[in-house]
Image (cartoon, rainbow, N blue to C red; front, top):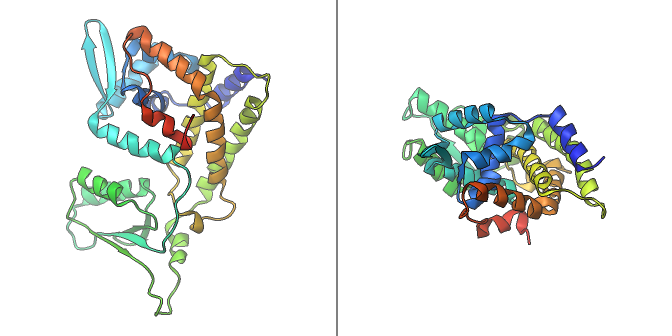
Length: 306
């Protein structure tokens, strides 16, 4: 089996949804190049995945309706760019994806408390949804918690939902002088890690053969194939990783398959990213000769690409 055989098999057995794939390509490939792309270049980038012109137009139209993308016209040409509010979420999400698994626990928990009626039903629902996406667990009615919460991310979330000042946010540790249940017991009631662990194992089973293939000294691939492989590994890893509550390593079952999945994604990404960038540069410059090269932050991914 060569790289194209692996690509064809993956696309036949686990074809990514076009709208979700567009999000992956924007986050992984377009954001480093300024966050804007002409439709002609986007069509060329999506073509190897079997996404035709009509399906792509439908996908970007829906993403624009949902506020993720903004559209511009220049004569008969159209361009799409990530909106400012969406860019914040892209940056946060992809920082999680490429960052090494180094969460360490200091024994404290961050609790978001909503129990005095300050939020209406719609606000409570939106807050719960966003906190669950950020990996928080339901500790008790009206209380969501996380043992490794980022204060900046939580503050941005409350500001974005326009509920800053309406909930209580506290951080605390167990009192050593009191004989009580250990706070680690909260994990069993607040988080079910079995589904995430299973998804990581599936990711490993699908991409480990590709990593082994790329280690062969005689392996060859084109820039387009490199781009497709890079996109597929990030797309699959992103789908699992963004459901991972990002708990500290000390609180995870050992061995945690997320650690192996991260190393596998990193290995494949480093093996193909250089050639993939050649394909991205060529596609973007066909529609815009002045399309910027990847920004410096791109080369910090996975602990450094150089």
